[in-house]
Length: 529
Image 1 (tube, helix red, strand yellow):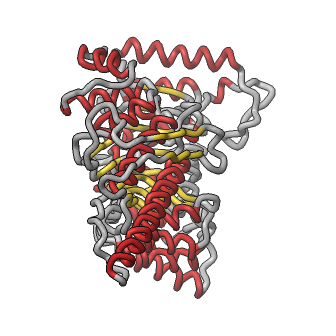
Image 2 (cartoon, rainbow, N blue to C red):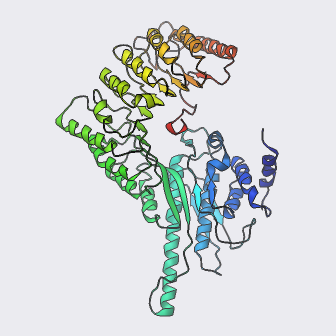
Image 3 (cartoon, rainbow, N blue to C red):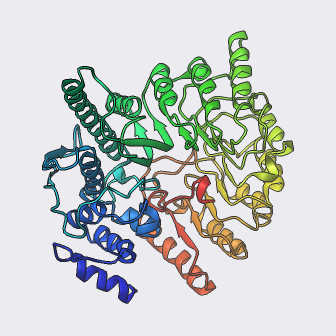
């Protein structure tokens, strides 16, 4: 239920112009304006922001609220207000600072635009003064690319918007300095740098996502705007479908003090490309997470070249002292896990090895390593646990049971007997919060048994279970364990789902969710663990 203060704030932001207001009301007014989708009110608030820091997540509240209300126009309005004030601060004292700037989304962002006209002294909340904001923190904004919020801003489009803003302000600064230099030259006979002192500017902390389409504008923003009035500081960097040299160019342009996650998926790098990129990651002392899934690494057939590449990869990973999360998903690592992880300085807390063609020796190494008792998240999806990997998996879970919070075993060809063999060990994972079993060949009876026996895991919050094998139509028996084209009997599935829901209701575990939908539940990442 909304507080009385929030309800009053909603009434205030429903009308413009805003009256003169005490500074203490700005945070609640920002929250109300953002959640109600009022970009022009947000523009007014940010223009007169009375504090040095504006942090989206702290102002708006829970991440779920941001996920449900990532209004593109609201985010753009905040960016534009910051740009407007920075340009205004660059103007010479006494000069009419009326200007108009139209911001358009750019490629593939739709047709929406905001037309901003800020005459000098026209801001309704406070009289003109120098901008107080010094840090705009836009980290943690959820990615609306999945379509949950049709008018939402994706991380990609947010990156483009911020990059364009940085380039725009830097261009304005250069033009202003050039005009000032000409005036000073006319007065003194020589160009001087004695123009008016430059404003301190604003640092923007953001999560950046770049691909081939947006590479150019982000590169320009990072390189030309590094010393400008609006400076991008990246916390989490994600790049897709870029060359190794392009990735290196961007990494070299990032402020090393801020980066904590690098995600380089779908870049077809291979061991050769990774050996080019990874040395540049040692610049980031706070780097805790590295994701390299779909990097086209295949070392199943050892060669002299692959042996050299593995040693190089291991050595470079060992140069990252703060690394705690590693994702090597869809790399073919058969028998090489020990060599790849051998130089790490500290135990990993999150290890994702989905579809990595692991062998029993790989799991045996992991269970005996110093990583096992520290693991909070483990993803071994896509491995065949119906045969020789089952016992090594059980031993590994024994070693991780005291720390494990998140376990993914999706599409692992497990039948009822395999789950039954794992259940005693799973029940010892007393801190487990998430269990993923989607895509395995389990019956309704096995799922009911799993539910009943894991009710004692009081921290368990989400179980993603497979469509029960007995809910498929009889004329399409399952032979391989999972086939997305097999016809489903809707009535049987509904009955099984209703039975599971009744068991949950009767148990009193209203905090526990069981679902056969693997998407849309905000699966926990390492930093939320």
